[in-house]
Image (cartoon, rainbow, N blue to C red; front, side, top):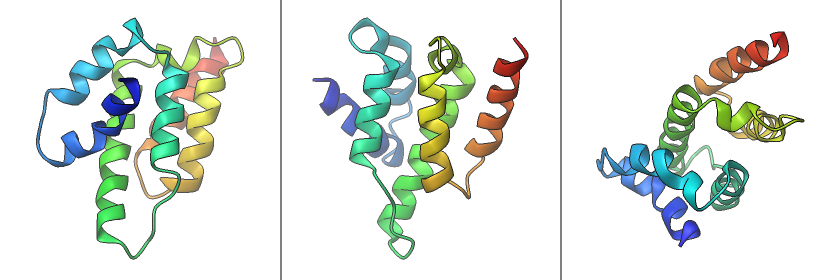
Length: 116
């Protein structure tokens, strides 16, 4: 069930279902961990082809979903003792989402976490 929900995040975003992603982000902790969701997302979207319009749309949608997640639930990335979720997201973004605003959000979150 979790895999199916995660697999539907990007298509729901692309096809204009505005409540799916926020609802998922609000309740998924009842049946999954942030790490499980990240693992499934990154397994589903391991990379993006630069000349594929479909891949570029998926990339923009995934980036938007991750930015929303970061902005509304930053604790999902900073509550681990070793910040593993944040490190995993930074590594993925640096490889796959370099032209996205998510890098800026990650830098801000990383800086805030280091201060504490």
